[in-house]
Structures are given as structure tokens and as C-alpha cells.
Image (cartoon, rainbow, N blue to C red; front, side, top):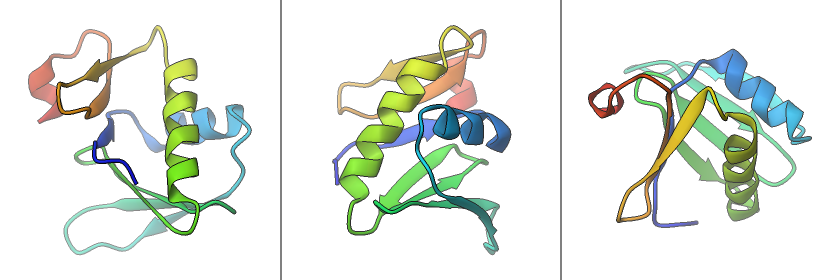
Length: 106
């Protein structure tokens, strides 16, 4: 997997729409978590785990790198102009709604 982090600061319906619109097939499931809500998207390539409270995405499974690249491509192609991507020097990328400040991502 990559060394950078991906964050998505939207809601689950938007994320589901982006993934299905990109032709990425899988099953969504809300996971019980002691700290906060977590969603898991299970595909043939791996799992996307997403925590809406912070927007953090984590990929695991046998094809996690493939799923991660497909997700980045889907987000980049389907969120504009409503969202904008911030790419930091360390490679991290965060997708936030246009008009929200950087402090909203922290």
C-alpha cells in the first residue's frame, strides 16, 4: 500500500455514488466501532474502510493497492467541482467540499 493517507470529507451516500459511478462493484456495510462509525466496502480486490468522523480511508486485502488506485481515480474524476483535492508535500490527499476551510479537515 502507499505511504500517503486519503481523506474524504463527504457523506456515505456521496461515497457510494462515486464508487458505483466508477464501476467499482462491492458491498457496503456499517461496522460497529467503539470510537466512531466505520464503513467497509468489500470488493474482489480488497476492502476500503472509511471513518466519516475524520474522513480517513484505509485499504486492506489481497488487492488493496489496486482498490486504492481505483478509489483515487474515482474520487478525482467524480467529485469536481463540488469537491477539491488537497495534495500535501508528504503525498497525503484530502477531498473537501469547496468553500470549507482546511481547519475543517483536522
